[in-house]
Image (cartoon, rainbow, N blue to C red; front, side, top):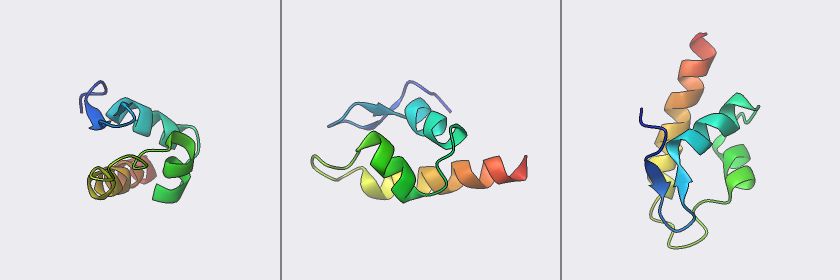
Length: 63
């Protein structure tokens, strides 16, 4: 995963920022959304980020 790739253009949220949020203790989509405030512009990123967070949480739980 390219950490510098943009997941939310409106708020300039990167994949790495989402991953870091999970590493710091976010346990759900809602937790990450509260921390990073993505999806508050056009909202087009929400569905994709939901899947990204799901995958990152699954990967973390395997460790």
